[in-house]
Length: 114
Image 1 (tube, one colour):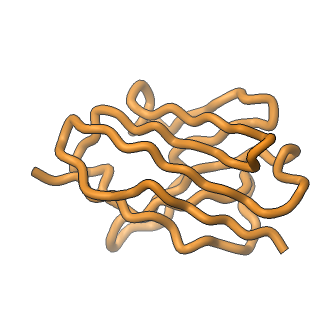
Image 2 (cartoon, rainbow, N blue to C red):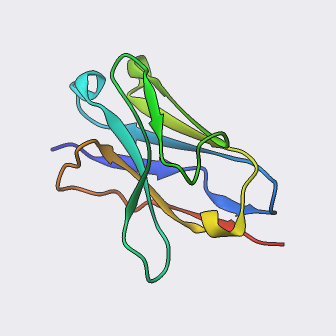
């Protein structure tokens, strides 16, 4: 059973930065395309960014140019560097396979506010 553990969230000011990490259990992480997802209050969960096993990234329009996804297959870890944060980035952030597996971690809360 794969498990995902997200960390690195917190409070940031508009224009600030945060770096999220997600560690996955299981030896087949390295063959997964991994995604970062977020869910804001009252909204559907949305895909923010994804990265192939070989490291090719893809971003949602709302974060393109501000967020960078990366991975370390040796550590079963995927990262999300978030720069130029906006209040509308406030959400709980999750990682999962892309397409998703029917298992979610607890997520990590990101709050962007002055």
